[in-house]
Every structure is written in C-alpha cells, then in structure tokens.
Image (cartoon, rainbow over all chains, first blue to last red; front, side, top):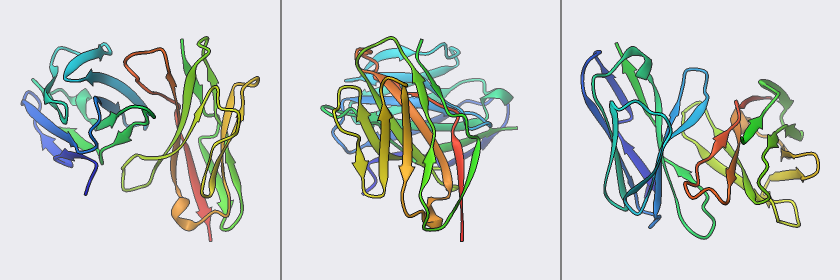
Length: 112
Length: 116
C-alpha cells in the first residue's frame, strides 16, 4: 500500500487553465505539506497543514489554493496556470513523534 | 535564517566502495533535525536517515550513516559498499524543532553516480 499517494503523476495543460492535484496519506499523520521542485531540482515548501488547518503559506501566489477536507487529504488547486508553474509538485506528510516527512511520488506539471 | 549547503553538485564512486556526501547547515536554533533524502531518476523522494541535534550518537540505517559534527555544523551522509542502485540525487534537509510548521529546508542536492 502506498503511504502517500498523489494523482495525477503527469499533468500537461495550456496556459490559463485551472488544474488540481490530489494527495492522500494512509499513515495517520496530522501534518501534510506541498513542496515545489523547480527545473534545477531545488525543493521549496509551499504550504503546511496541521489537522486540516493552514500553518504556513510561503509567499505562494493566490492562484494556488490548498484544500484539506480531512486529515488524510490535502489537495492543491491552481488557477490561471502560467509557464513558470511548470515544476514537480510533491505532497508529504508527517506525524508524531518522529515528524519524519514521507513524500508522494510527485506530480510533474507542464504548462504549455 | 536556516540554510543548508551541499557543495558537491556531482560525485562518482566505484561500486562496492564507500562515499561521503557533504552537508553543512546554519541555524541559530539549539534544537533541530537533519535529514537525508534520495531521489532516483524515477523521481520519488525517499527518506534515508534522521539525526536530532541532541542525539548523542551518529544515526545509522543499514548502509547509511550520518557523520554528525555539531561544532562544525556538518551532517555528512556516508554510504558504505555502494551499489549501482545508489545512483541518484541526494538531498540534505533541516527542520527547526521549534517551528510549528515542521517545514524542511533543503540543500541543492548532490548527484551520485556509481560506476560498475
């Protein structure tokens, strides 16, 4: 069973479109995250949610809106996609006591 | 501000030999955690090993060990008996324990290539 699963794995879309990426974890963790990995492989936190509540939003444009319907899910909706949004987006989760973050397989988003 | 530095963009190692991947960090917080992740060409991020700032002993997980030198602010990853499957990107990361967001700050990564 995959611990942190995100769908889709690949997403190719046109500029201006709206798209969503889904994430689910079956680890019973309280905290979930979205990270963005750019073309140079640099990873940066976007959002952190704890028990469905937003903890951090790291200067991400308003076009990005995370939604957490329950502790096990954290979805990412992106409006009005831009070329610069092309990247790999990773979902992760962590829980007490170790707080080790386990990552999903990533979603490669290509905006044309 | 927290910062992670990985100075080796790429490294080669011969199969079955040991290799050390460097990581230095900067933080003013006394309590923090250090992590290593592996990213193979397939793209997933795989957790390898964790070291807490107050841990007395260096962490080990199978062929992975973390050479933690607190005074030097370094947390190097040592892979023993390298295998072809170890070829991947390796990321060092840090978390401030007092940060309620638990976010990880990542280094720029080291690409390791294991030669047969």
